[in-house]
Amino acid sequence: MAFRWIFILGIAAVSAFPTDPVIRKTDPGLRYQYVEGPDGALHLVDMWMKVSDLSEQARYNPDDHNNFHLFTRQNPTVSQPMVATSNGLLGVTNFNPRRRTIILLHGWMDSVAGEFNSALVPAFLQAEDVNVIVVDWNSGSGTVNYVTAVTNTLVSGESVGRFINWLNSVTGATPAQYHIAGHSLGAHQAGIIGRNVQGTIAYITALDPALPGWITNANRFSANDGGYTEVVHTNAGLLGYVLPLGHVDFYPNGGINMPGCNSQECDHSRCYYYFAESLLRGGFRGRACLSYLTAMSGNCLLPGTLRMGGLVPKTGATGIYYLETNAAPPYSRG
Image 1 (tube, rainbow, N blue to C red):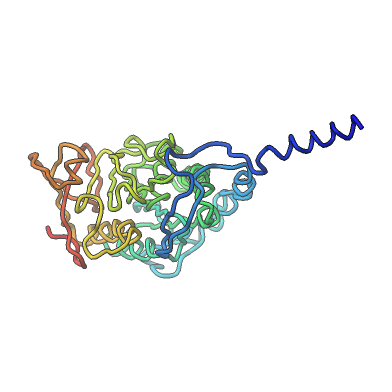
Image 2: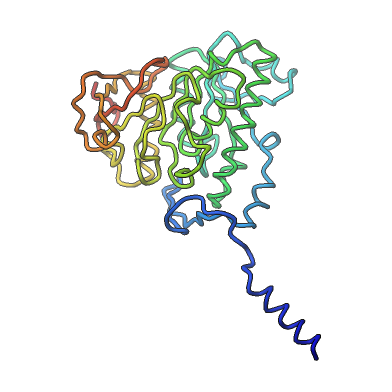
């Protein structure tokens, strides 16, 4: 009888523990939040990391699962595959180490064929004779489990850094020839790559870096991730990070509620359309602001202006800037 009671008490004790224990809270605030995906749909996501998340994260190996697609003016619409450590495959591509190299990183639940790459690949190739390498990390970012995608952002960035180090070692290219641009989770990943490359990446553009999962995340984008770092905020405080993160931070239209948009996802994605236009047309001249609060209110009266985006890093420039855009292309008023 005593054994029977011990057995029952043991079962009760085990059942008192949660079946999927929480490991950590990724951000302060509500555990369950709606996050809008690239398709415009709202996804209810759990912002707390659980034991079960670890198994999903373990299935993603970026060294094996990430794919690299090379576009050049010789192959502007059909990509050529690049595989780290495959010198032979590299030799039959159009990669030219004498050209600048652009690395593009899509965001959560996006893909190599999404709007981000569709906007930026042709813009870069039209603007300059460059190598454009599109990183397809959908195996790590394409899960509805947002916390897992946040964690995968770090390991993917470390892996892309290793790829760049290999590419430079066999071609003689240098970090000074690179421009990395990423959107949302890809924006934070752009900074992580910068920290893992041997040398200093010349130019990094963070396009509306994601807010959920990054408020207290030490791996978020940082001004020192590259020689010149620029951030464009278009959904600040919602899907996008609100505080300044780069050497220069632009808050078009106050960083939220973009003209011509009627959803958070439209605001969140509008940044890469602005950036694509800046590569081809220039414009987008911002006014200097005292702080991000004055930038968000549009109350910027400091002397000095700076153009947002563009092909060339504005090395040495710092500060916060406000500008206004049109509701439809051409977006620039300047």
